[in-house]
Amino acid sequence: MEDAAAKIHSQTHLLQMAQEKKQMELSHKRARIELEKAAHSSARDFEREVDRNQDLLTRIKKLEEREAETAQVLNEQTEMNKALRKTMEGQNKKLEEKDSKISNTNEAICTLRDEIRELNHKIKNQEIQLATQATENESLQEQVEYQRRETKENSSLLKEESEGLRRKLERLEKIKEDMVNLELEKEPALEGLSSCPRLPSQPLPGNAGF
Image (cartoon, rainbow, N blue to C red; front, top):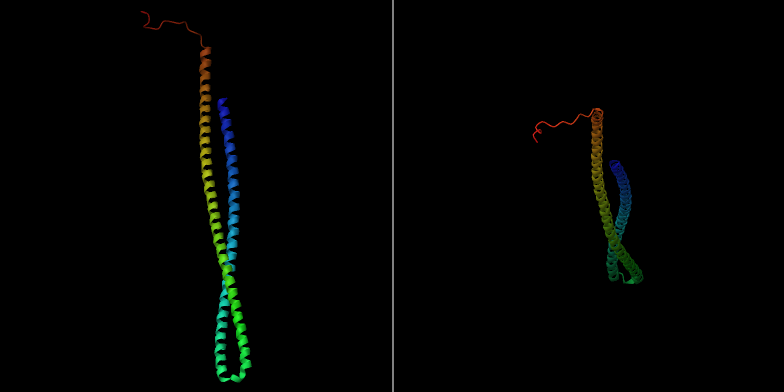
């Protein structure tokens, strides 16, 4: 009875361990999937920010080119105005109009420079955000790796404990089988002894002198 109870207890423990192992694996799997989803979403956001940053850099480059072209035009117009003042003093009105255009061009340059400063500020902010996202991505990757290692270690421990319980159960089964075989071997001997007539007791040889 004790062997049967031990066997039932071992089987129950094995079933509980198997259920706990399955629940733990499902829990780790769900956690790993959620972490991988979060890491994938952060990676997509990171790529979008990189593309946006590249677009801003392209716009800045174009604005800088426009600034250089405008500055060149401004220099050319200034030189032309100087030559015109020396050779065409009668065209003061036209020169004033050109001066007005130069003033407008200067204002345009100032506006472009303000836009460039604002875009540079935006780029710096985005670079900070990208660095933060990169750190978050690295942290998520570390968490995913930690979950994988923990799942692997827990699975190994559960396998070892299950294997130990299995071997213990096999030993109990072997002991029970040996005990049953021993009982079966004793039964014919006991039946033979009960069927034989009892012989009168005789002194053993060598004990007569005592």
